[in-house]
Length: 187
Image (cartoon, rainbow, N blue to C red; front, side):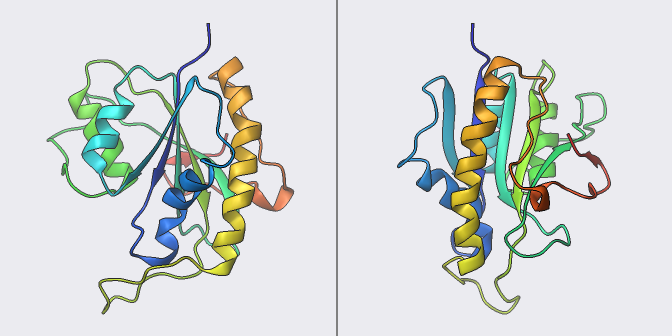
């Protein structure tokens, strides 16, 4: 029996390179993942993603832009420390798409432990200026990373379907995280 796997694109399509996750999901339409994988563009719908995380998946791969201090376009695979119901505290905000808050919300809402969560992150080049509400379009550097992310998912997904506890690797040495941010560990 195959593991149940969720691949979720997150990010705001109107905030420059923050659209990385939705762009990867859109590119997967041309190179679909196996049918036992649930693929979805969750955009900025944090509540929807929180409920999807509670839907019995063994593993979830969130695809997102994340500032980690690497060269723009660098892909990293990280495994965040997950909150549990006991440490989630008061109900977190149900709106927005801060992945840490979404994980806390899912932990608060669910009776079962969260699935294993991996984040396929891309270092952004362009971010929307603070004085602008909209900055559509990703940079050329991040657009190029979209194709590499699709290829990485096609490599990672069979490994995770065979063994949800496996530690998949990205294909390029420059895409392996040198450091994980506080509260995260590199797989």
